[in-house]
Image 1 (tube, rainbow, N blue to C red):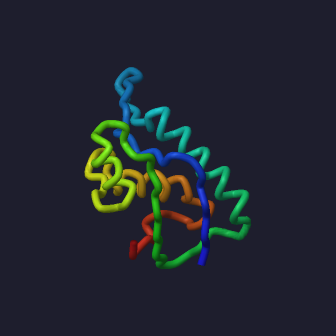
Image 2 (tube, rainbow, N blue to C red):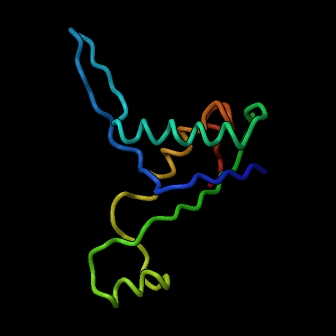
Length: 117
């Protein structure tokens, strides 16, 4: 089992941006996603120095986010007590996608190896 701790506020995978060069269209990550992936990769390289895993793997991620600033004291208290769960964007799968993409080639060869989450 590999356990990594990535400190800081998580960043969700953003929608790809597109640019044209002549007749060609190029898709690229938004800067915020790209920078977060670089950060995750650098932290992962410090914590995991073995060769990437091969074969089918299961991945478990726990994301901690700050409490949204809007809402009454009662709403904030309910969020702190885990009575009310965050149902706002970004979606959990976008956080997961950003992290699993960043760890490609570091912890596993390719994220298509992930068969269980």
